[in-house]
Image 1 (tube, rainbow, N blue to C red):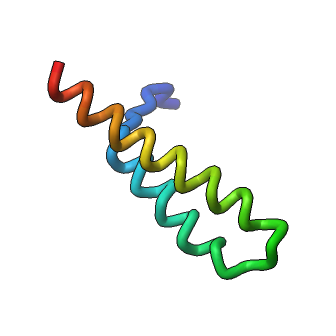
Image 2: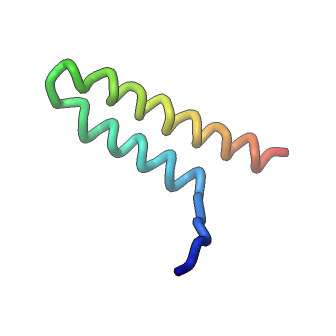
Length: 54
């Protein structure tokens, strides 16, 4: 079994943003999770920009 995990910040960030968009139309109890996913996605994309800059 291969234990190698390849994590890409851009793919993960876009995945969080996509999940946020999917859940935004659900009932109010899911709105907070949609905002959390949006925040995490934006944060990962900004971290990738900083990583590339430095």
